[in-house]
Image (cartoon, rainbow, N blue to C red):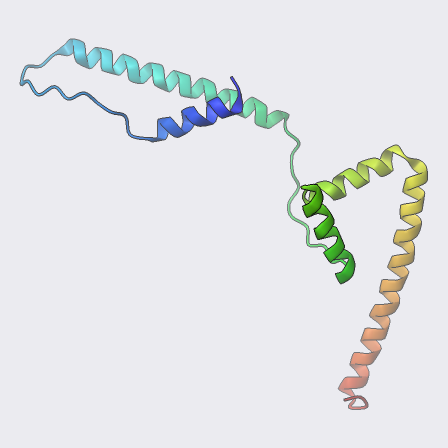
Length: 142
C-alpha cells in the first residue's frame, strides 16, 4: 500500500460515516452485532495502517531542531535564489554540501580553507564594530 492510499483512507476515516437509519420500532440484535463487527474491522484496519506508517517513519532520518544561522547578506540572497531555482531547501542543500565534502577530501580542504578565511574576516569585522560602538558611547563619533 502506498502513502497516497494510506492518506486517502485516513482522510476518509476522519469524515462522518453514512449510517442507514432503521425507522422501525422493532429491536434487532442482529443489526447491532453486524454493526459492531464492522466497527471492529475498521479499527483493526486503522491500527494496521498506523503501524505501517510508524515503521515508515522510523526508517526516515531523524531531523535535528532548527538552527539559527547568520549569513552574509549577498550570499544569503544568492543561496536563496539558487535553492529556489533548483527546488531544494537551504537545509537539504547544506546537508548535501556536507556529504559531498565527506566524499571528496580535496573539496573538503578547499572549503575548510575558505571557511577559515571567512571566519578571520568576521572576527576582524566584529572587532571593528565593537571599537566603533565604544567610540560612539564615548561621544567621539556621531
